[in-house]
Amino acid sequence: MNLYNLKDIKEKVNFTQAIKLGLGKKQGLFFPEIIPKISKKKIKKLINKNFITRSQKILSMFIGSEIKKKTINSSIQSSFSFPGPKISYIKKNIACCELFHGPTLAFKDYGARFMAQILSLLNTEKKSITILTATSGDTGAAVAHAFYKMKNIRVVVLYPKGKISTIQRKLFCTLGKNITTISVDGNFDECQKLVKKAFNDSDIREYTQLNSANSINISRLLAQICYFFEIFHLVPKDLHNKIVISVPCGNFGNLTAGLIAKSMGLPVKKFILSTNSNNTVPRYLKTGIWNPYKTISTISNAMDISRPNNWPRVQEILKKNKWKINKHLEYGSVSEKSTKKHLKELFQKFNYISEPHASIAYTLLKKSLEKKNLYGIFLGTAHPIKFQETVEKILQIKLKIPNSASNYINLKELSYSIKPSFHLLKKILIKK
Ligand SMILES: *Cc1c(COP(=O)(O)O)cnc(C)c1O
Image 1: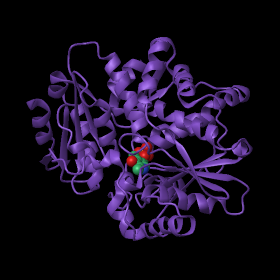
Image 2 (image 1 turned 60 degrees about the vertical axis):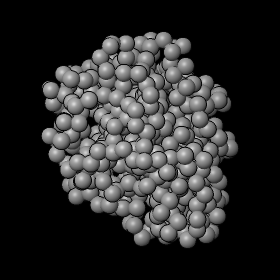
Image 3 (image 1 turned 90 degrees about the vertical axis):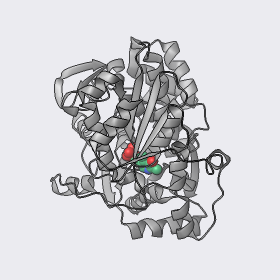
Image 4 (image 1 turned 45 degrees about the vertical axis):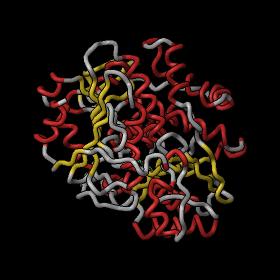
């Protein structure tokens, strides 16, 4: 598999290099030179296969001979060894695809676990690797768990202080061992900036082999393609030619994966790009002007990102396929008030307990489907318990804590606490 740098198309790397480097020159993202196209007939066959077998086939198509098929297969097998996607039918023309039944209760488990498997496989050198990543809430836990106790790999996670929920924090700040967590007195974009700076610092690079496990890493995106195919396996066949998928977007990794699946031939009619009030992209699509505002804190905190890293990849896919905005990709942003209103609606009208991120995707989906003979799926990106305080307050109910999360609640948090200063981060990175 070959990939090129979106900021410098002359820089070409293979899959292994792309995973190890994370970003290319000028902090450009890597993009696959070829997206495998699958015929309609083969797509149908593929959809009939089970999740693991199908995912192994999809990943092999991308990765090719660079990694042995047997190895790809066993990596997928161990990455996806948890309860996969589930469809909850909400009403006549709308369902939720729940991607949160993994170990850290958010869809990020899919990408993070596959990346961990592949990286540990590639780590044949003796030099230790440091996974340095910023999280707006769910990546931290997914990455920490995926790499927990792996030999020769240290994980360092930065998160914005006071801006992620208790359960989110407990799930990864309590692990210890090869997991270091840092609470930064700032917002997610500032955390992300610190991470980018570290990647450009020669002292740090000399000291350790750095890797970002953010959704900029291509291995995460490839793993996420798999569950878009699974949606078609799970829903009745007579819906297959009218499916619209609404994706709650933050860093736009999830949407990128969905659009790649569509490029491969998965017959998704249309995607809906849903954001909260951090709506740089919807404003850009409307006005043609890229003008990120200061990041605002919302109840859908995993989407509080005003400079989404994966956006150039989305643009590349649209350009390559000559897909038109509105025809293939609708967009919108949802206010805090409307997020709450629709969260309540899901519960009171349809007896479905959701959470703010999915509620945003539902809100725009519902609006888009009005008077159309289409079938909508919104992605359930996290378990409601991850936003326990918010959901309980809005719905006036008490949530049950799933067993997998209750184990962490009473553990001590082990995080460092710093101001958003690169100097302080560097000290932590080089100290141990
Ligand atoms: C990460 C996350 C998102 C945003 O996904 P991106 O791939 O960054 O766009 C949405 N919802 C939840 C719950 C998340 O954790």
